[in-house]
Image 1 (cartoon, rainbow, N blue to C red):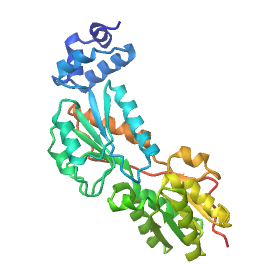
Image 2 (image 1 turned 90 degrees about the vertical axis):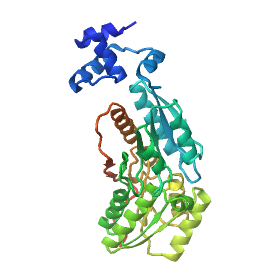
Image 3 (image 1 turned 30 degrees about the vertical axis):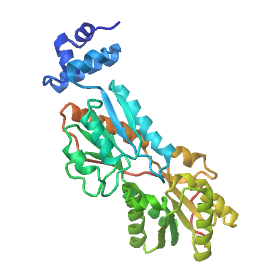
Image 4 (image 1 turned 180 degrees about the horizontal axis):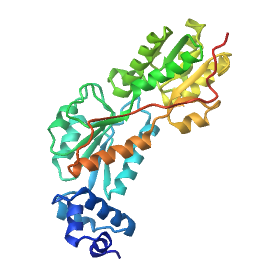
Amino acid sequence: MVKITDVARHAGVSPSTVSYVLSGKRSISEETRRRVRDSIRELGYRPHAGARALASSRSNVLALMIPLRSGIAVPVVMRFAVSVVTAARRHDHDVLLLTQEEGEDGLRRVADSALVDALIVMDVQMKDPRVPLLRSLDRPSVLIGFPADADDLTCIDLDFHAAGAVCVEHLAGLGHREIAMIGSPPEVYARQTGYARRVADGFAEAVRAHGLSGGVHPCEAAPDAARDLVGRLLAERPGLTGVLVHNEPVVGSVVGALRAAGRRVPEDVSVVAICPDEMAEHAEPPLSSVAIPAEEVGGRAVELLMSKLEGVPVPAATLLPPTLTRRASSAPAPA
């Protein structure tokens, strides 16, 4: 079994220095801290969890707050959760998953206990009622998402506003003049969920900037709802040649509904989506898409939180730029 003395010898420091790096009780230079952590990883050292928590007054547990509200694409959300858990384990932290619709009460209950050292908060709304409480807590937090007022907060996410705009620019570049966005379920917009609102805003601004015709159409996350919406759009807008889908559960249903209506994809109607790469790649045809980088966002959220726990300054806002991958579902607009 690897001991703390083995780590100290390998890193060229004293055992007490290794202990201070683990506990955070004393200020250690970044170069020494990095050398000790490299030795810990290389040797596979695992301090006794109970002793380490006692020495550091930490639980080595992070809270991940994901209220599983209606309209949320659970498989996509779970990708974020898995990435957070995986990254936390690299730092010898466990994750307490909070999925109930508890809002401020649940957040305060966990923060007031000794259960967790820090918090990651998801499903952020534009006017999120949890934000004032997060600002007042003595525990660090990171939001995956941006409220309208992000002052004094640490936030990270895909730049969803730019993602909506990039999809419009792709269709405009292919010559499409009449397009539509099939968006998230109505209740997601009613809650003013940040990512959905920003995609819709980015789409609408880019439509105006390029002089196109197009609108945002909320859609329930059900195949029947998608088929009905597609039928209505085609009846009302026979010149429609481009569709953006930002509603992961109905991506396949939208393509199927277009085909059922006699519209070929992409010869008659081009389809782009904002969804995980795996979903886009396995669609028929494979979809041009902007990926949702759940693994990167979740991993970087944990890294930001670890830095905050160690007193290292972090950027207040981290926006990941969208990347559109062109696949078989988009083509030049029909003449």
